[in-house]
Length: 338
Image 1 (tube, rainbow, N blue to C red):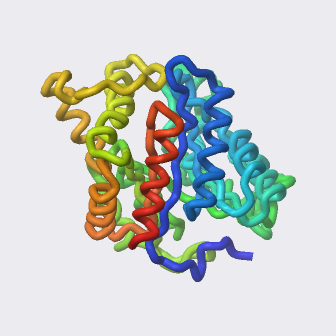
Image 2 (image 1 turned 60 degrees about the vertical axis):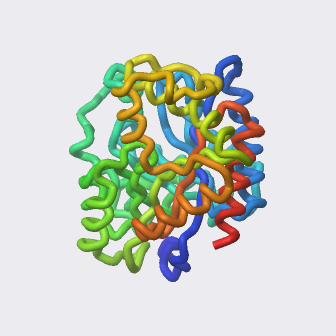
């Protein structure tokens, strides 16, 4: 059978991207409890899917064993789709990923998504530790994607079968932050998720290329674009900007080669940094809504109108878990008011 995108309602949907952040003073076990709690709230609030991202060697991100964490989230929820946003395929054998996601789909049928990226999700030293034979680099990504889809198909061409996996047709997405992913997703007839929440520079060009060159497939009849979008929402604009400072600090630390746990927020943070750092953050976080409910609703609406996004994948790196929940709740209320 074909995967579940054909015939989808193309009204803009809203979903959650979670990095299972590890806050200063906390540990991964608490991050996993927070992620499950967020997913359960997101399910009640009407978000379509809950995705987790593969990163390695990052002190502030706990979602390294992505498939394991997806199982944890899916097991604690009942209706929301759960998936990878994404699995960094150069780190893995396509067969292993087919087996992992075949297992997840068997346990939670009709609820699993598989987003695939070509970046290592780490530095080169970590990439070597993950997959010691690096002969399958990013330039082999299209072949690896095709091999993985074949393993999940009804009649694979491979001599080896993915058990479980064969015939389960887990929906596959292509993730990207450049034109490469847009071209590949269009050529393969797959839905496309662009990382505009941290790499927005080529967003509009990638969207236009994807839509112009899209070729229908068994999985997808017409283009489907998901865009990453940061939301830092609170009951007051001042509080929202205060909460956003944790993510702003984290981006500066990362770009400075000093990745760390998610730091606590700092009042008036943008006024305390230099011009170069302000420009960096304005560029990286240009696809963001920061403010009170009215401001967030306006920002989300403007972004959808500008891009024509079929779906927003909302992320919120907020230090305090209760404040993070409130930010997503405000986003859900804005969604319901459209």
